[in-house]
Amino acid sequence: MSATGVLVAVLIGILTGWAADLAFDRRRGLFGKLLTGVVGAFAGAFVARRFDFGGGGLVGDGVVCLLGALVFLAALAVFRRVR
Image (cartoon, rainbow, N blue to C red; front, side, top):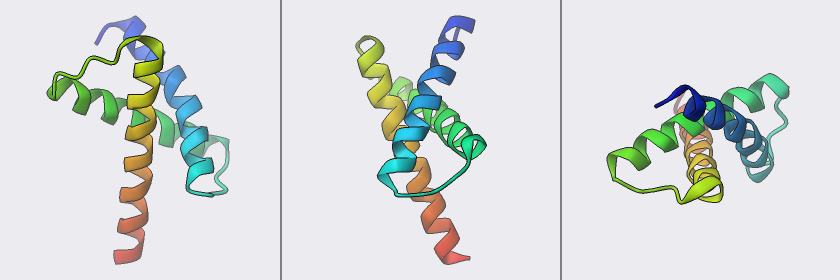
């Protein structure tokens, strides 16, 4: 991933972290939202690249990052219940 791609993933990750936080009705702080979005964005981009799924521009990349953030939050919820 190029430097521009990383920057775009971080920016989209921030927005999608906020959206995913709202979807799961969490009340995390700004840092938690940023971390969730960025981790989800990179995870979503990694999985999309492995399955050769082209994002289709900014909107497609945003959808991939949002799905990654939602999956990341779901995995965190399952992990916290098991513990």
